[in-house]
Image 1 (cartoon, rainbow, N blue to C red):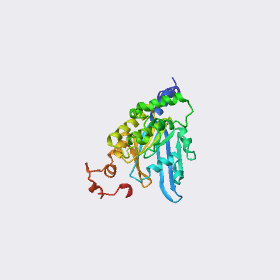
Image 2 (image 1 turned 180 degrees about the horizontal axis):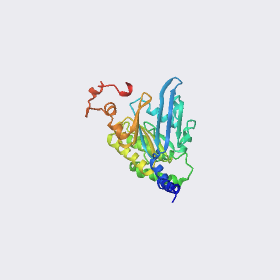
Image 3 (image 1 turned 30 degrees about the vertical axis):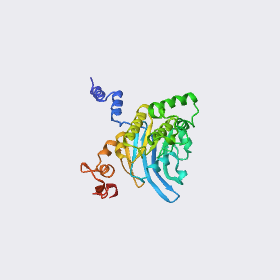
Image 4 (image 1 turned 90 degrees about the vertical axis):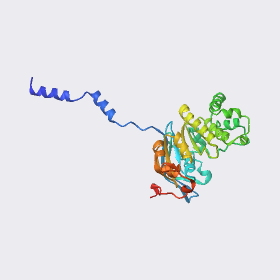
Length: 300
C-alpha cells in the first residue's frame, strides 16, 4: 500500500459522514423563537397633536400565550391597547412613529372593524355592555362581522355559555341590570363570538370582588389553553396578572421599563416593592408605601 493511499484512508476516517455533520449543525443551532401573533416596534402615540403619551414602546405576544402589560394608573396601558385596535382616533390620538404587526401583517392603517375581522378584538376597560339589550343580544352583537350562518353562531353561543354558566342563567336579563362580574363575563363572551385569534383585555379586575376576579382569570386561562386564544392583558393587579401570564412588560410614564418571564418579574425586588407592596420579605403598610425607601432603578 502506498503512502498516498494511506493518507487518503486517514482523511476519510477523520471526516464524519454528511448525515453526522447535518445532525451536529442541527444540535448546535439555537431553537427558533415562538412565532409572534402581535409585535409593536418602537411606537409613539400623540394626543391632540401635542401630548406625547407612548414613547418608543416595543413588545410582542407569542401565539397561544398570555402576556401581561403592567403598570400604575396612567402609565399608558389602555393607550397601548387602543393603538393596537385602532381606536385612538375617537379620542384625537394617533400613532406617529413605529409599526404594529398582527399575524405578520401591518395593521396600523386598518379600521377597527377590519381588525376585528382579522381576529384581534379589544375588551374595553369598564365592560361597556349595551345596557338596554339582554345578555343574549349582547353576545350576538359580537357575531356581527361573521358570515358563516346561524348554525355556526348558535354553536359558538353554546360554547360561550359552557365557559360562562352564569350568562346562560341570565341570558334573558337586561345587561344593565346584571352585576359587574356578569357584565365582564358578557364582554369577554361577546369578544369570543367573533372567533378571535387574540383578545386585548383591559383591566378585567376593575371594580370586581376578589372571588369574581379569580373566576374570570381562571376562565381566561381555560380559553387560552383549550381554544388557543392569545391574550394581551393590561392590568393594575400585578400579583394576579403574573400568576396567569407567561411573560410581562411594565410600563411607566409611557415607556417599557422592564420585561421578562412572569416568574422572574414576580421575584424582582423592584416589582415587589413598587407594585406588590412587599419589601424586606414582608408586606408594607400604606403609610410606609407613601415614602419609598429607594428610587426605582430605571429612574436612577
